[in-house]
Each structure stands twice: as C-alpha cells, then as structure tokens.
Length: 225
Image (cartoon, rainbow, N blue to C red; front, side, top):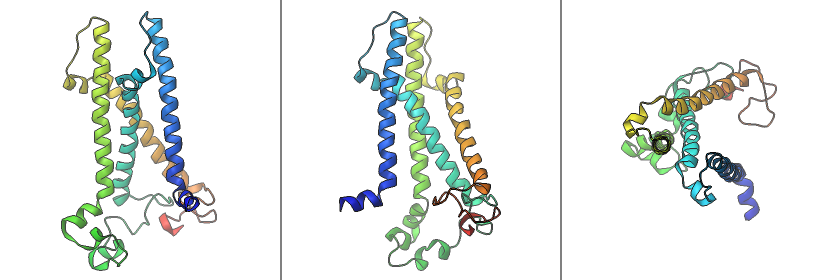
C-alpha cells in the first residue's frame, strides 16, 4: 500500500519535500545573514525562532509565493483564449475559448464517473468549472496582501531605527519600495512562462508530459503532438 501511494503521489511528494527543504534552508541562511547585519550595526543577534516569525523572513517568502501563484493564475486564464502554434502548453488551434459542454463533459455530457459538481448544473457547476482559477487567485491575493503587510512592517521598523517618519499601509502600497519588490518577481515569472512556451515548440524532453513526443513536428500544437 505504501509503495503504491509513493508511486502514484510521487510528483506531489517530491516537490513537497524539496519545498520544505528549501524553506528550511532559506530560514537558516536568512537567519545567519540577518544576524550578521545586526552585529555589523552594533545590534543584538536574534534566535532562529524569532527570525522565522519576523517580517523580514515572511516578507521574503510572500514575495515569491505571490508571484508564483500570479504566474499560474494568468497562465491558466490566458490559455483558455490565447494560442501558441507548435507549443504543447497551448490548446489546439481550433480549441480557443471555454469549449462546449460535450468537450468538457459537463451536465448532460458528463459520465457517471464525473465529479458530482460537474453533473448537477447551475451555480455549483459554474463554480467547479472555475474552481482552480478561483483558488489560484485567492492564494495570489492572500500572499500579495501578506507581502504588503510584512513589507510595510519591516519598512517602518527601519524608518524608526533611523529616526525617520513611518508611513501608513496605504502609503506603503504606493511606494517605490513595494513596487520594486513586486515587479522584480513578476517580470521573472512572465519571462519564464513565455520563454518555456516558445522553447517547447522546437525542443523536447523524452517522457515528459510538458513536452511533445520527440518525433512530433515543430508545428504540432497541444495534444496534436
């Protein structure tokens, strides 16, 4: 049973494990860097526990989380309507749009194995039809809000240490500091997604569902490959 679970859930388990390892590594490295800065300025070092509950740590974490979920949210929404000839990340060229109920196996076109909310129609089916986008949007907005609060707290702490005026949360939202941290993450995510969609037109990875079959022609799009 355990071997079957490990095999069938291996992708999620693998990324979950390396996520935790990277987060712990970030906390340890960030703690060391933070204390080095504290000591360099003649201030007291802090414990690891205090550091991982600080705005300094969570601000850095939230900056990355919000940009990653923004990437998923936009890519998911854009690929409903927008196409890229030759990319497996695009739908086939005649499939743009929300597609028919038959294509999506909704309501009367659903099977007995389809999820209940895909079969019942009405508001429940409408919500379920967009549930992944709704969740990604909620996580993005939540982590972006958390980034703004932690960044604001950290900014005002620095201002106080330098005996300078603090600002309101709304003032921080309009600051260059906030938008620099936000946009430096966004631009890298947009570049990564756009370039990946383009690279997969011509390049291959045997055995990966993110690639077309090695022998598929460059012009094959989506599942045509």
